[in-house]
Amino acid sequence: MSAAPPRRVVICGGGVVGACTAYFLATHGEVYICGMSKDENPPDDPATITGEPDSIAMLHKIAGKVSSQLKKEEGAEVVAEQACYLPCTADGLPVIGEIPGVKGCYVATGHSCWGILNGPATGAALAELILDGKAKIVDLEPFSPARFLKRRSRRGV
Image 1: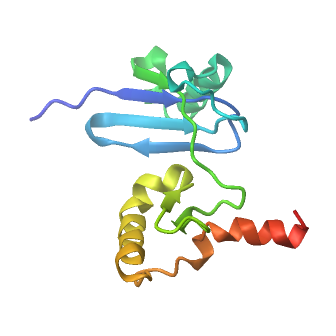
Image 2: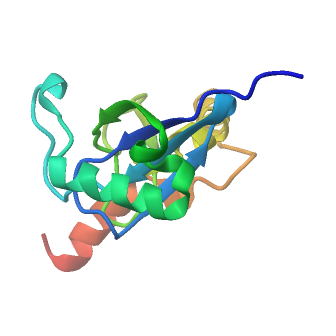
């Protein structure tokens, strides 16, 4: 009979909670709880990014409502409280492709929280684009950096 893994909770917060709170079950009994950050520009020094106490307190409260095992009072160990900024675009789609007017310069960013999941496919598509001039595994047109230039020209900017 093996011993049960220790109950652990990792609380990640840094801003407005309620717009989106995600729960990720990891190995060894850990749970990651993430809340949305504020809509503001990140600081120049990443080391200065800290979670907001009110947001983290709200995530603790939400965690306890999800499961009594996630309550600190019931023995859940908080391993870390962290904050981060996610690379997001104005239209919610990643930016993947060659930068207009800069031959041979490519970008792949703006995946928000889906970067880890979509990173391998993005890398493969970008490699095809660079090596073959066109991605075969996915149509990259909706993700083109040029879409932002098209919007500006339509608005007369």
